[in-house]
Length: 548
Ligand code: G6Q
Figure 1: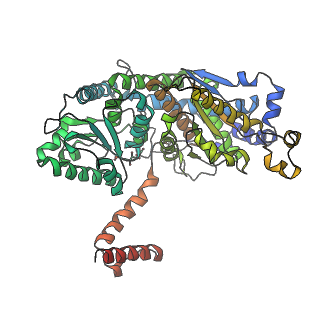
Figure 2: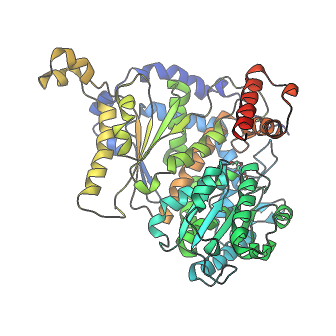
Figure 3: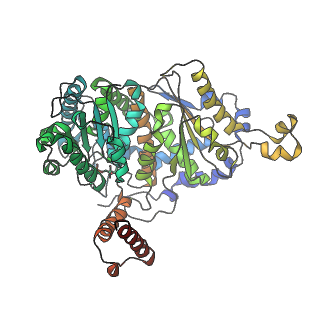
């Protein structure tokens, strides 16, 4: 199926932005703020409880006007509407992209292939709520009659990063008498460390896999079954200690899990967009069904804002356009995500998948090679830790790195002056990056001449400040949806498929061949390049020697 994509770099607005860029490049944020004392109030937007300050970006009103024109001219509105209508906008996989349906309230209709999917979503949510409540209350018992005390989610990629991030983010709201662990890596250490101090009689495994065929997850799931049965001694115990989250009932049954204990989702939910589907079962057990529904409501509020707000006040659109401005005109390569909230410590890792798997593409939807930059590299750490490590490069290095500062007005753990100190650091970092410190200012402090260049901060380093009231499940939903939609709008303008991930396939296929060569293959038959052959031979020889 061919989708007609307007040629991005030929658009009038794109060319106007190209002509406009050299002028803006020469402007310093010091000047822009001095010339317009209202800039810090004007260049902000607020919606659904998120305050978005974009005044410290290297833009003028004209830049914004042209970026908004680009959004219109590249057909963004039609792409947004197509997504919400359930059209198959994931062209290469011929799938609808409907994570928004996962948080649609009862009664709203979203139709895919002639069928309203919202009732199914709520049926699964109800089933999850029932199960979660039974685990939380102790009514759901292990095989030997003990209540569940430990929940281990086994999954990888989209079936892991969302659940881990959401659990960590919402730990404040979680049941502290239950232990939650997450096993993803095929490295046996991950499983061994997650289970070494646990009692199998009190442990529930959630096998989370859309396909139920993923090598890492199925290997860990089989290891988990062996581990559990070593203690429980009876394969009938699997029914009490294993549940599945999947789209693949056949494989779930083949593994030995009763499909009555399977929580369904659908092919129109992409892995990295699935934390609010049944993939969030561990989150629901941790925080309870009510808080989980509050999170969904937060997502939905942002969805509605995204769907209905005019682009100039639309947070995901503004955020996406600003990212595109640096990526495509300033030529920046990365974005730093800096949450000043300890509970969001896994948020940057989660965003890495969301952004980079979605927009790390080299061809347009119609398969043409792209001659402009697509998705940037996302990275980050929670503040203030990063300030004592990599911020040096952001402040004084030779690379321009737009930053997203994320902060919350109210602390979840009020402790002396901690929160004021934390927030002071958010505001100070954004200020220091934007305005820097001139050589004259450094000299005026009596700095020895030789040190002046070292202590000078050129400034003009852009950042957004994203402020929310308090990290609640609802707030987390809003924040995740903000990034989801901003990734989508960038991908839509770049004309790429943000919802496929063919780039993960080649390595997987090659590994399958190498696995058999490591385990059984004869050295003489290796047909890789000389480097891969030598590595395989070296591993095999050492393995043989160490096994005597
Ligand atoms: C996400 C990707 C990918 C996927 C994992 C796990 O968007 O599709 O990260 O989530 O490969 O896949 P399964 O859930 O099928 O095991």
